[in-house]
Image (cartoon, rainbow, N blue to C red):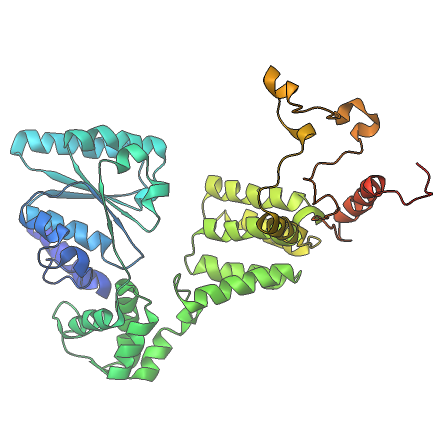
Length: 441
């Protein structure tokens, strides 16, 4: 690096966002995650002993996953290379591994490969890392906001330690903010921030240090040399969209989303969906709510609704964003306008109540499986009538256990296709109904 490069780096650092400028450089500067970084804890001991294994940092945004990876590289003297799972492919991984291999052969310098959003790597990309982790060519550090048990290949996961990070407490966030106010890398003591403004910024961040520091930076620009509570609120007013994935507002928005679809209001349903998407919600979470809704609130009134919801999930995974908003919008408006029925939920609850009340009633003999001669001799399957041998593929038969044959669990409504089910089922049940004395048949 020549003098011009050094000058450019310094200038770039000065222009960097406050959250980047205040990134901790050592464990002693790091705030939070005491269960990992405290005295005698696993991660601190691994760094102090210079025996850091391949690891995955799993936790919410802004909890220090990338920072920990950089601290490890600095403390161990390893070369640090960062790739994004969103932007990188197998070719990039192979080049990074080849460089790491050469670095070790030439200088005996170890390499840390940090993969941000590792859950976004597909199977082939994760498989490409596996042999190099096994051989120790690289120390792989991954960061994810998603449960690694579901998002990372079992083979790769078995060779890595998973460390769980938690959202920062408000007191920890206040410490982070105060450090940024005082430190020369931050506001250098040139801005006074009132206690209630500081408390507000820590609260509104929802455990995310990056969000807290970004809000402080905006507040300092808005409020000048003195940031009071009003200036802090003005600085983050666009974040009244705040959608803390673990907090009350999260559940409020999700509830409004579902109730808007249930109430056949596509305008409101799309609005609440946009609130979730624009606040960074995982699209799969949104689509899962749609899939549940398609069965719970639409059901057989429009069987196509479930297919539309599932197709939206596949489309989003195929297309990514921002294009993925199109199938999401198509699906949510379809569900909002579909005929509504909650019979799927109610039918199951009735059947469950019967199971819990009556226990494991015996399977009627004519419905039992008879794979052996002994079972046949015992009467298993005897008297079973095969519906396909009868007109219209229907025969009057009892399929419920003795004692439940008068029970009706499925009661179709009058909406959509269920009206057809209702009429058809009424005919079937009429044929099964016991005849009164003197009736024909």
